[in-house]
Image (cartoon, rainbow, N blue to C red; front, side, top):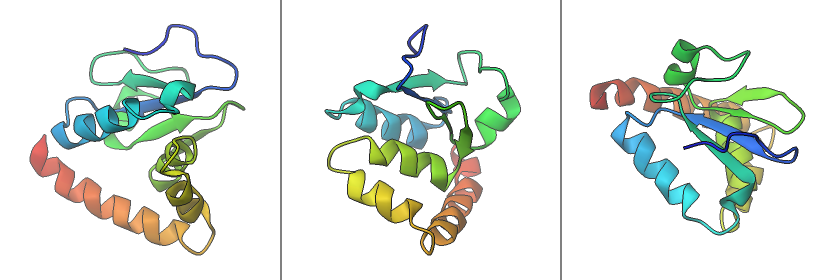
Length: 118
């Protein structure tokens, strides 16, 4: 369940908890040291926030950054990974200009396969 009032420095992560692969991956992140700065919203059970409708939230992984910007897909994963010790290197790599489009392409491929698990 998400924190009711996000901290100013917190990233809010919107994920589809009804997707078994997605739920397992989020559980992995939540259990990591350093994940305290992430608020988790399971959009299959909880309402989303203004600027993100339920259908969009269920279709792609999203994160709201402390400055209010909403990012999705590989960019959202990069933001999560950059905040979790042990995965920061991966977040920096995915956020690096030349790698970002490739990571997004891989994420879109995953989305096609994910439909089979729902």
